[in-house]
Length: 529
Image (cartoon, rainbow, N blue to C red; front, side, top):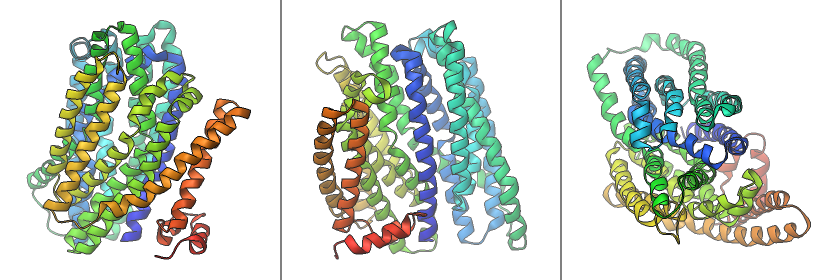
């Protein structure tokens, strides 16, 4: 079971790496095509789309995966199949309704909510994606309940490839007609990507799950009432959907407050939109890269914890939660430090816009707190306590809203204000989740033992990275100096963890190809504890 959990997390992480790299790469030429103002229009449509999508379907994969995992633990294969069929029908209908509403009221949303009528074209282009993604979510949740992460991973990569091609083609083709049309062409990538992912998952279902149906046909149990199953799905999915609003709501708060408060600080509308594009379309996309690890861990953790809970294996539950938090810190702490340290050089290298490094520098710490919030939310959801992450999220978003409004209009802070507000929001949300896990639910772990060694290794990495960047910059251009210092810093961090014994042999052995070699190196270098 443990190996299936970690391999599932690794598969999703690997796909997430590919997806996020593609996402980061396409934003580089897109930012050059659209500029800051065009990126601002592009980003304005996404918070409304993702908020509606999260509210209607974000909890669906986790809800299905949890129910399916529980059914499978009881050998109720017919019940697992029934959960999927009912959820598919329910959320296809919900997705269709929300797609229609966004299509019908795009003009009103753009003018009254986003305060920019030009954003209506992007909303129209993105509205069909809600329907496709709702169906995709049902398929992914079913596969994840079986702890089969490959279909989700492959569909994510295909979805992103299709999205990237559509985004760049749409922006280039429609740019002569105006920025608003170019932004709409780019946002249409969400629609084509969702359709491509759906076709991919249908193919996996026909081939893979058809075989499982034949295999388990003789072990089917009495079917539950349709409404009872539907109520189970909704009861679990709704609070999870609210929890899934974390990033969409944060982006929505930024879209609603930041451009207006920047104007209140004395900036022109065009300059305010440009800075908003730098914060959300450039700095924000880089900050979201490390979340691929924590998202994969959280997705894998929910069915794994639910399964262990059904089997009444308390030590396994606690062990998986501790390991999830440990790997979250392992990846996110150095990522946050590195993005903050090299914010300006990275933005100069990627976007040819060093100015975007200013919001990135202040936004970078949110990498760690967002990751920890996601990991602790996954633990709480697996423990059938999905309401607590919602409470933590709402509290954090309240902090975000207050600080956004208060700080952004200050000329001394400007675009740094909403970046600091995001850090504070996720810090508050994580701390609340952590306190609930540790003191209310009695999950036993010491957070200091999880973070101490990575914190020390990160300190060494920061010192080494700073020194090597300054040295390389004397002889080479910024791009080479930045890449070289990042690689050098990663090596310092990895070998520090290896020597200090923080990386475990079983962690390394799960990695294909390099795993056995790294595990052998582990035996030679690690300090015996």
